[in-house]
Image (cartoon, rainbow, N blue to C red; front, side, top):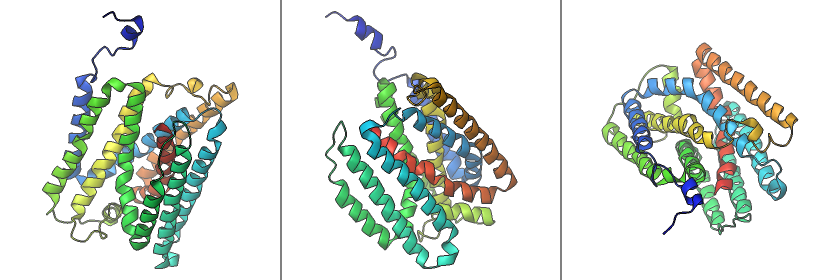
Length: 335
């Protein structure tokens, strides 16, 4: 059987499963993150957020800009719903955070209301995406959505805590779509590497199930509260912080290592090649200025962390809801 010139050009030079070094590095990073998160959860949490929170948001912003179409056309409704939801839900989340002391017990009702709007927003995006090419049969989204809404009114805090732990895993899903698009020969190996995440979680839970609760100053209480301490009776705060820190480290690794590596085959690092950048020189310059200013914000975030880490951390996680929500429409468009 003869081999065409096209087959020779596109055939991966390192086989169908990608280079083994990719798997070794990925597994090594996941295992190291789990080891350090279990051993020094608070220190690891402080260091990772200080160093990587801002840069990973900058890479995410660059990625989202590189994936936006130059003109929306028939996608206008989808992206309008997406952007309105990101802005509106972020503003509502910030308002709830500031007014928690004012409303007292009614704050839980406000949180359940916010969770309800979030579920309806995602369901609307799923519905709009299902009607676009390639069309999907996703009618199941509505009964699932109403079930989740009922759940959030029963346990609004636990529902929100679930989002805290689910969000870092979304990065793995986005990475899978990017590998499928740019380096499909690595996808099978990547799926094997992803199995290391639940295995490491199982080891963490086994080793730390009976660990003593973490005790310390106000910063430690903020970190343990964010991880769910006090909501899950009988669960060690050491285990919760280690779990959350491990997942956040994996999340940062995806955005700061894997996505930039895949970006060498896309327009991630070339603003003029982005669909928006190709519209005109004005758009190109505008995107370059925006990304430069965003890099300055990252530097400013580091300075704020250095000046007052606890307060900056609280404000950061409140405003970071922007990038948490923005992942939904971009992920749906990739499906």
